Length: 525
Image 1: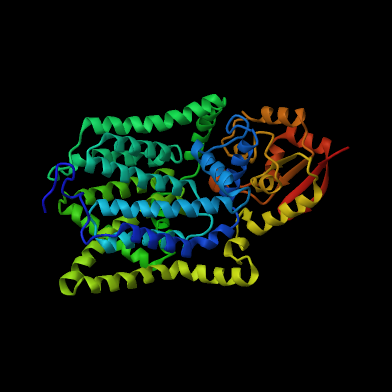
Image 2: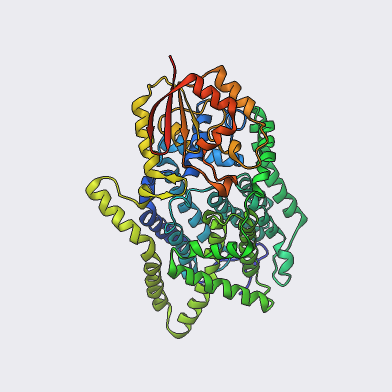
């Protein structure tokens, strides 16, 4: 096939006349069918923390300076955007997540088309990811690692556009996307290695240029520069840097051994067995091609993408399922190799009409697992106006969605609109559901209860509480999370480690009520 100067072979128009508008339409329908019910899911602990911090920012409390936050800045930005677009509710972040998944999967289809994959690969690979994503539990979706992974898709898409059209502004956009992903999750930075990919495929007329490399770096620095400027303008840069230095201790606090990390890779894959088999076959095929000395751009692109995503998971060393989302997305994209091989086999022995029919059948097979959750949710929504979801009854060590919802209802019946609130515990959800931003900088007890705490925040907290005593003081118990604190005691037990704080509570407050997991204290009049 002949090529032009601006469209190197290996990257020009796709085989088989891929109809991208139709593919994107089908992907959007599939995302809506598989994920519509997630907008009714409650917060997990992580979502509650991030939503509360964003809610405080919307009410004039700058993140880091006035509201303690351990995450990079763009996490708060995403929640801020969700509330601005979809209002103050637990469903707002789910709405935004649903929208971003749909747009990202369309971008993934476009990326695969640029890489010359055929119709079945361009359609089915995004469906593999969607099927997996909406087969995971509510805690794993709408997570920082996922959004960072989505931004990586855009970074790669614009990078390939830069190679294809040899226009530097695409590299700038690619760098911006990766810079934003870094501001969401530091560990995805390794994906930047893909800028050197042309050096590994010398027989492909895609060439590495220092101009493209410099523009890519400039894009990343520009995105980070804007974020730093916002932090400086709000007076939050120094508090942000101090918190990141403190959080560094968390990275070495509790690390799984390598064999447990390897085993936990299987957990999210078990959620959708059919697509897991396709992913396993695709990874095996990719490794086989690399061992055979492949010089294909696509093979190395998928290898670096998947490898750096696995590295992100490995570096965090906690084994949480959501930390595998970058790899799950990269591996889903890699299934294009399997679909390509399968398409060639079918068209060689049959015809393109047969391929179309088989592709449709495969799309239905991919959708079976997530639709097993969507159909009951749709029936429940039809008859009860609100689906009865497993997440609403979720309970694990130190966390319960039912307990949190019950506490929020009880608290709403005990406090007035003008009452101020302080929560000593993990469930920042109480702030969010009672429409009260955290006023005392520390919305959760985490920095105080980690095993390596060095007393740096104690005086500041006491000063803030005594300077403007909250009307209601909530103490949470049975919320121990040793995998992120290194401490087996819950927040109520840890209160004894802070005599000044406990004395302040006992001297100024009287216990007004108790609901499972929470003590509610009111200030003495």
